[in-house]
Image (tube, rainbow, N blue to C red; front, side, top):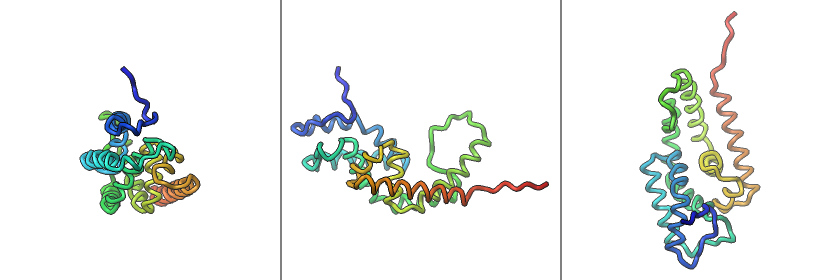
Amino acid sequence: MTTTKPDAAVPTDEPRLALAALFDGHARELHRYLARRLDPASAEDLVAQTFLEAWQHWDRYRPEAGSPRAWLYGIATNLLRRHSRDEERRLRAYGKAGAMAPTDEPADTRADARVDASGQSAALATGLSALRAEERDVLLLVAWAGLTPAEVAEALSLNPPTVRTRLHRARAALRKHIGATAPQEHNHG
């Protein structure tokens, strides 16, 4: 039995086999990333659309231009951009409701920790919704998908300095937003 490295070279002479290897190596992590930005059902749809688009545009894949992982995340991010208006509305709603998308949080987590996290999640969701879409894409590809800035540059067809600038701006804006919305403790002495 052979195992496929997720970013091993993809044989372009046999697209069907190569796409199957890409699916086996990346569909799960791609779904995890998309499910954090969308609901799980929409993430499934986008994963399917990503691989359909990869199949339809197989001739556009250039191994010398970047890794297969980055190529797939680029396709997925482009598809996700079509959903950006819905995403922004959802993040605003999470911010108002005081909760982010579901996580794999253990059932025995203390209630006070959940209340604190809920407040932070609300601030984070509101802050994410306020970012420019380009900055949000870069930040979430790094934070939620675990791509390196170089992989993000490949995925989004950007140069690395642009990715670093967008990532810096997104992080700074989030820090500023979260700092502005953090409850202030008052000493009543």
